[in-house]
Image 1 (cartoon, each protein chain N blue to C red):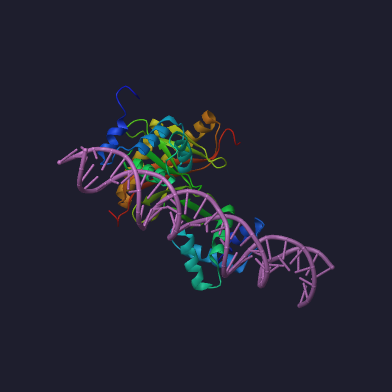
Image 2 (cartoon, rainbow over the protein chains, first blue to last red; image 1 turned 135 degrees about the vertical axis):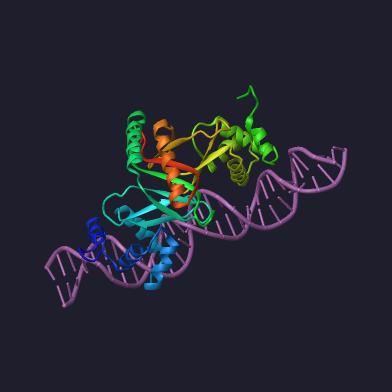
Length: 148
Length: 148
DNA sequence: TTGTTAATGACAATCGTTTTCAATAAGGAG
DNA sequence: CTCCTTATTGAAAACGATTGTCATTAACAA
């Protein structure tokens, strides 16, 4: 990630946003964190390396990063949104296992076979319902290894 | 729905809840409404036929109905939960088309083929991640006919 | 009919998120 | 490098959906 430069810096500039200190710190934290973080979790982590940051800036920057396609946002249903850094600029289709108890979110690879079938019905829906599909989410709710 | 009695009355009693007037009115509204209603939309509709009702009761009753399996709850990501009445006591697997603009939710039938494949990967996840899957959601986000 | 207790409704409180606004800093023009 | 415009910032207040509190009411078992 150091070698060919950080793709997301260019992406931020390319989308017409300024490359500011708080933004760099926020992306840095997201980049070095595993899993899906809530806005407050991001705030706490950023605050450790850049105490001047405000929670408002976290929210605004996260929205900006989502709009730029650098960060994914998912709403698991517990009232707080969670954000995950995208490792690559390309779309990387994956699904989620969401633990009803601890709220933890696990990424799972998009099975080729399944992916094909989902895309088939997607085309059907576009035709039958005249619905323009931008993106889709497949989620499995239940109990994770630790919470069972 | 009149013929063999209202299955949900028995279900409510069976789950240990009392059959009260506000509850009957709320289920009546849900039963006769098409689509997915927010708590406030339910409140406004119930208020027309039973003005004494309070918003708090709407929320509490909706949660109770979800817990009883009479109503489905879905969180489309716009900050407000939506509720839909289940026509039958059995699970009726279906997916959702969610309009990013107007927030409208369209139910679509669960394609047999797709359903089979989803269940296959579900079994995989249960094995590979030791994750107990209770239920799943497949959503397609985009623009509906009217909003395109 | 009565007594117990769940359910109700008004109101306040909570929580995540957004808005407002004056102060600051990014980065293009010169 | 310096200046100037304008996006960005942080603190605080506002917001909207939902939940808690509590005294009053009504289900329904006895």
